[in-house]
Each structure stands twice: as C-alpha cells, then as structure tokens.
Length: 116
Length: 108
Image 1: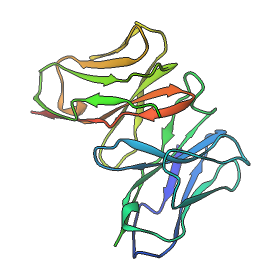
Image 2: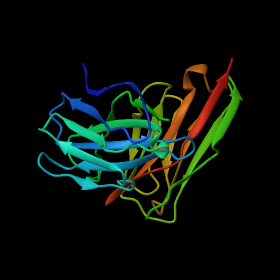
Image 3: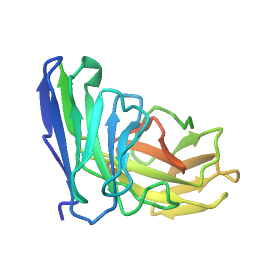
C-alpha cells in the first residue's frame, strides 16, 4: 500500500533556483496539504486543496505555489529558493477536509530540502 | 491565529518509567488529535478525542481531552524503547493547528 508518495526525498538547491516537489496519493482522498517542518516549530501549513480544482493558502504560503493537477496529485513549487526555505516538507491527504470533526491526515515520508 | 503549546519540548526517561505530555491552548477545539512521528517518516495518527472530558486508552497510552476542550494530555505507562519518537498534538477547529512537538527518548 503506497499511501502518500513524495518525490524527491532529498534535494539541494542554490539560492534563486526553482524546483517542484511532487506528491501523489492512491487512497482516493479529496483533500491534500503541504506542510513544512522545522525544529521546535511543529508542522506549519503552506497550502491545501480541499478538493480537486481548489487551492487555498495556509499559514506560511509566501514563496510557494501549488497545483492540484488531478485528484491524486498535488505539487509544491519554489520559484526562487531562499535559505529560509530549508526545511523538511510533508505532503498529506485526507478523505474530507480535515477540519471536519474527525478527519485523519495521512502523511508522506517527507522531502528534505536544503537551500545554500 | 490559534496557538497550541506543547510541553515538555524534550523528554528523556528510562524504560519502565511513566510520563505525561501536555498540549494547551486558550482556544476551544472541536477535536484534538495526537500523532507520533519516527525519524525519516511522516506523522501517524494515534487517537482523536472529540468530547470534553473524554478519555481514550490505547494499550499503555492514555489520552485525555480537557473539559473545556482547550487542552489535552498523553500519559504513557511503563514506557518502552519503542515509544521513542516525536509526539505532536493537532487541534481542529475551522483550521488545523499543530503543537510544536515533544521529542521523547526512552533509554534501555
């Protein structure tokens, strides 16, 4: 059972370079999310997609863009990477928008990004 | 903006000891979830609590939701090395708010 798959798992960028993190889920979930995790700061929501065709900003959207390509795939793009974007990025999905009472989030294994 | 404070941030104990992790907020949540994250992996859901005062047990783990639905605790009895990991609480109410996490290390 693949669940939520993220690629790449590791990436090193130079300041100003661009890249896209890919995420795919095979659970037929409606909602997908991108989080970043930094030491001592838990998980912070970057963008989310409540359903196919919709995307919304989360807590820390600046410097990022997203695309909900279809129901399965949700990508995160860094147009001009900055050292402050060095982090571990997690994609997650849920059957319905997780703000519904008991929605469970299923996470990928993470993508570790370093911006030099 | 809803804030969820977790304490302690770090906890290192010997196998067999008991411990409690706290998650506190000034905001009311519709529900609260606890996740555990192991190195190199994403968080995995342990439990969801919905009702104020609710207590749920998962083997040696006991979760409690505060009466006012502003706080929660996770108590582990007789900790084992396999309990080592990062424990995260997630408050749910119109938005999702993660706590900063508690890094638990259980030493043999």
